[in-house]
Length: 337
Image 1 (cartoon, rainbow, N blue to C red):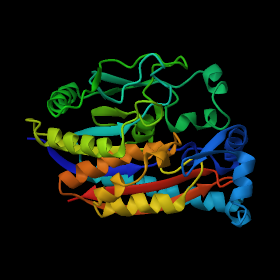
Image 2: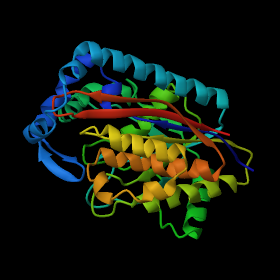
Image 3: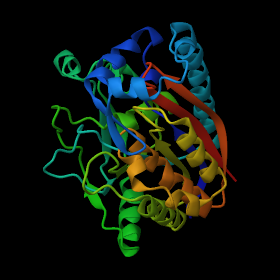
């Protein structure tokens, strides 16, 4: 039978894979966009006024950015080494899509990739130029310079699909990566970050699990994400093949407006297996698509609790980049028996 050996949770934002000197590029986009904070939508200038009681100056210097960036790199490598030491033979990854492979024509709430191979294909110069400010510069953090093709785990994927269907999760199945709205048929960056930074471009066979935490109106609730994770754990345990399985979540935490209090609530509740507290969080708190990526962590936390493993938080690093409190809050954790 399969044996789960480790859980890994990691943020994957562009600030992790770009030099801090390039972080101001994301502020250009921040100023153009509207942002959700505590479920309410604001313009950038409104956030600046609303959060003016905070002294942002020492938090948004390049010196501070470099300190936090360096700290994050250490934590990412720590996770990579822990994964390597666990010696998994296969991995299941909870991640999401951001109009990279799905379009408005078809956005599943949950999907399981069951293909033989997984393409991680770098974008062309034209495709990178069309991305939001600061995102194109992060490309090499998610895709290698040349096209790569990794092994899928179709036997495990099919087992997961059957078991999830039996537990009344009507998951979509994918046998190939579709060509998305941006013209690429590469695995989304949530997964690419894991392949590049946690698996060092040498991944074991993987099963990508997609959670729609970005696009209305079919975003799964917190309760449903937790139940999904438990069902995945039971399916992994029942897989009748001798495999060492790693379960990994990629994404979050709060962005594009950082909310440290909310992040701490989520992290503390996951560490305590306090799922009632998590389920009590109003869905409006996840209205920001970026913050919604916490819903990649929730099924992992529930799965690891189901498997009897304990969460260890390596670090929580709020990486601010503007006087509006925009940026990405980074977190790095692992679960062990």
